[in-house]
Length: 419
Image: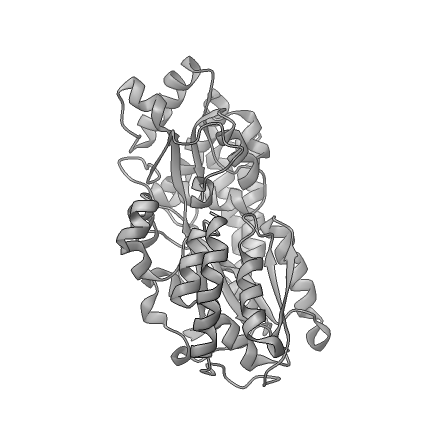
């Protein structure tokens, strides 16, 4: 995909100069005006962001952006951002590319500033993504990248066996148990190391079974349910019976991607970036994509992605707004997809005939995003997620039953949410 960068830079720079992205869009909190910025983000796995910012810097020499890449791990990135933001005026980050589920926490802590809705083209975005950028009915960030979990599978093998992609848990389990061993493969994997990825996988299983973890206000604990026991129990059974390999308990996104692209897995739950062509992939051209299965049909994906927020203590808030307007503009959002292999937030791109021909998974992804559910929305989300990880990892490693774990998790979440 990187061959497209050079061709797009000249046109994009011209667009930037002509439009100026000049609308202000910010409410006055702290410093205003224009000047250089620092953008903090988790590791750029596909290397697309540097060229986007170089184009901005060429067109805006007085508002140059320095990119700071933090660790790939969401937990480590969160810790480093939070540490910097607590420093107040001494912090070094101006604009932050934050996980969609950090918005309530960062807003409630006063780390990021509220934004004027009129400054951004929110009606051009996929509807579910806008809600992830709000807290208590105020906009505190702008959607930048969206995401939804998908099921990737070895299409060549399922075609040879004459079976379609699984639509239910029972079908997934049967194929993982019976077909995968015939080809020397492990059956199914997600991201089951105790980190943010495990929270996502568990939430998808619980949601797909019809359960929830917290109520809409984030203060009522709802996880102690038959649906939650069924969802968590499904994953635990996979590990216990071996069609989820034990190695998956050490997988984050990249480890699971490598296992799949090295030809070691029949099925993988992951984000769409895994579908980007890779020189190291041994299965190029042999991959299919489908919605995540559920108990009785398509399941529920967790809404992923990231939002762009502005530090309360930035000295150059006008430049920060202009940068966000640039990064969420249609030309750049197109490049987010074509060069970054990341799902854009602009709705029209999912129905662009040229893009759909190039990325046939876009209609499937659009459906998944529109039906996706957010992770529990809480100003203490980091603590909520850590509790989910710790408790459910004990289930996956056979130390507790799903019933025991759900009761324990409900108690821990109740303590967190009532503080």
